[in-house]
Image (tube, rainbow, N blue to C red; front, side):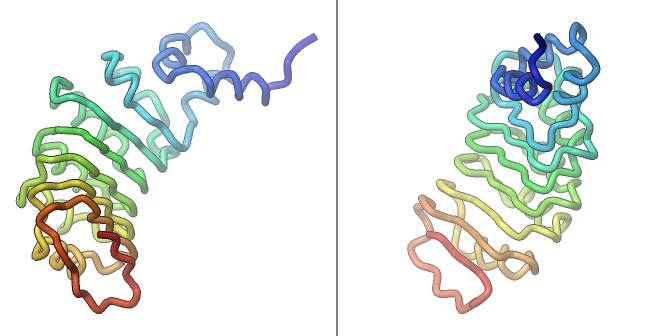
Length: 192
């Protein structure tokens, strides 16, 4: 008796991503397609275990709509983050949570013209130049999450609101330099 494909797919999804990628050669075509045609991927555990970047870029970049990378130390090489962000530059939702990365990471994010939601919570190294490149190039951002940034100021938030014409929600909770925002924008949800 054989298990239906839906149950196999469920089992596959329970496996850590790095195991899925390492076993991809020895499985049937249906399993391979199931793994490589995902719409949402979280590369965090695979990056922590230093999975080869070639395996991390096997996914169909036209199908990935959501990419998550979280809790990654500085020890991840800059080239690896650059390759990942360049490969998946069509994602609509990008979460880089607690990722202390290089300025080039933000430059590579700026190449993503279809980005609608950006979460850079706890990424403490936001500097003016890299974040400005995102503002100038990612015009479709609707949701911006900037929680717990020690350098973020009220002036920067005002600037984001002016520049991101499609912005519907901005989350600045935990930003110590922002005490109050007295903005009169009825179409924008602000969390602080």
